[in-house]
Length: 140
Image (tube, rainbow, N blue to C red; front, side, top):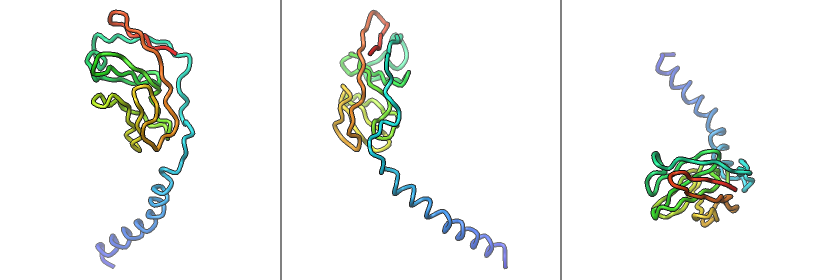
């Protein structure tokens, strides 16, 4: 057996062994129902400096303490739990739509955290914000 023949057989054998695992992973990837794998933060009370960084400009956002805080295009601040209620992926803020989108399966939530497009069927927890000067208080 030549080296080339050996490598071809090993490669084909490995592919045959891995295909069931790959297909099985794809088949179960979206089978979980909403089970809120990461609980929404409770007793929230923290302050952020919005004079610099992501929250200094309209459309910016950041994730901290399990919460995504965003500055809308009009300059107001919104805060919701950062984990998608479908499978726990950290969501992103979409400033042009003023909503939140899960990059994993495409679930969408409005600016208050209400589901507008599945596969998620549970809303995100929302939190209060209070701006005093350049300090933004985020609280339950």
